[in-house]
Image 1 (cartoon, helix red, strand yellow):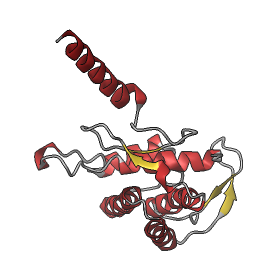
Image 2 (cartoon, rainbow, N blue to C red; image 1 turned 180 degrees about the horizontal axis):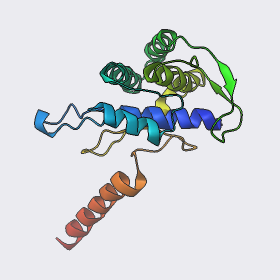
Image 3 (tube, helix red, strand yellow; image 1 turned 45 degrees about the horizontal axis):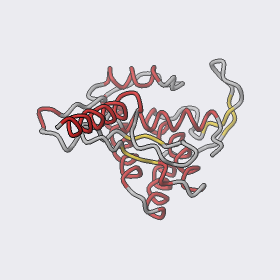
Image 4 (cartoon, rainbow, N blue to C red; image 1 turned 30 degrees about the horizontal axis):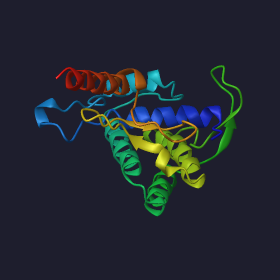
Length: 190
């Protein structure tokens, strides 16, 4: 699957955004919200080089958390019609305004948000369009959650044969492979 550079960046951003959500399957005192405050939102914007952020406040934080919840719903469905409806809703609410841009040492690329858009609209438009391309390509099954029992992080499976099962082969994948190996060794020795 050929994905342009700016779409790949948007997909990485939406995955990171979804993964900031508190883990709902854990006890409430163990849930960690990666966007619990405005400072965390500034850090997220800096880490993803989101341009034109300006001054952020609690209203921006709540709006981005709402967008995050809606993106998580897209990762939770394998129904193309539901995913398309969710993407359409996000992109329409953001007031999508496609335009070519070249800033911050990036070559020409497409921004889907208005120049004065809020950070939530920026994320909804750019990341929503990246997810729209996945839906249009008939590749919704590439939007996945890690299969490790203690991890449910979102990821986009860009492997050639759509076989990726873990958010990271170095952490979750390796940990489970080592555990399976040790179990086989114990069983063989047993």
